[in-house]
Image 1 (cartoon, rainbow, N blue to C red):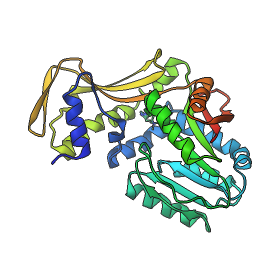
Image 2 (image 1 turned 90 degrees about the horizontal axis):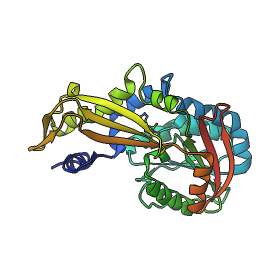
Image 3 (image 1 turned 30 degrees about the vertical axis):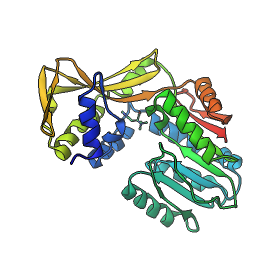
Image 4 (image 1 turned 90 degrees about the vertical axis):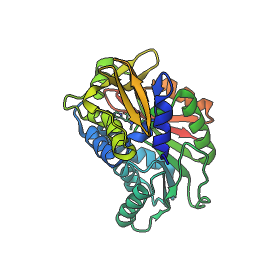
Length: 305
Ligand code: AVJ
C-alpha cells in the first residue's frame, strides 16, 4: 500500500514532463532544511517580510481594530504571527489551519503560553480545499494571514481559486498576504542557488525521502539541483535533473531517466504590486494598503474581504 506521496510520485514518474507537488518537501528533514534556507544570506524573503511586519504591525493593528481574530493559512510561521499578536489590540482568537496535526499542536501550545487569554483554536485541514471555520467570535474582525509568499507555489488558476475561497471565509474582514516581488533575475537566481548548497539539499531531500519512506532506490549523486528564473512566466522553477541515463525502481516498477531529463519539483511565482492587486480583485477582494522594504524585494498586502 503506497502513501499519498508514493502514489503521487509514481504518477509523476509515469507522466511526461514529470512534476510533483512541492508539499512533499516538508518531512521532518525537509522542514529542518527549510528553516536553514530562511537563515541563508542569499534567501532574502523571510528576513525581509519579518522586517516589514515588524515596522508596520502597528498600522496593521489599526486596520484590524480591537478584538480581531487571526486565521493563519498554514502554521509554519510562529515568529511572524507573534509580531501581529503583540501589536494587535486585544486579539480575541488565533486559528492556525494546517494539515499536520503535530505542527499545529506545537504552535498552539507555544502561543497559549505566550499570550494569556488568547483563545487558540487549531483547525486540522488542507487549506487548498474548502473548509469551515469556527463561528465568528462576535468581538472583532476576522483577519486572514498568509505570509511567506506561499501563494507563489500555486499556479495562477490555483491562486485565484484559493483567494476566492479565502475571500468567502473572511467576508467583512481582510487578508494580510505576503508576496515576493519580481526583481533582478540574479538576485532571484542566487536565492534558490545558495553557495552552501542548502537549497540543493532541500530539493534532493525529496528523493532521499522516497528512498526512506517508499523503499525507492534513487542514487542521489546522479541527480542535480537545477533552479532558474523563468522570466516570461515570472517564476523560479526547481527541478531534479538526471546527470546520466539511468533507471530507478519504485514499488516494483522501473522508471527510466534520459541524461538531462528532469522531475519538476516546485514553482515559486513572483509578483508585481499591480499584478497581485489585480489577482486579488478578481478573487473578490478590495485591495488596500501595501507595505514593502526599501529595496522593494518583498510585499505585504492588506486586502479587504
Ligand atoms: C515556502 C514556497 C515560499 O518558494 O521561496 C525556498 C520554498 N523553495 N527555497 C519559496 C523554497 C526553495 C519557498 N516557499
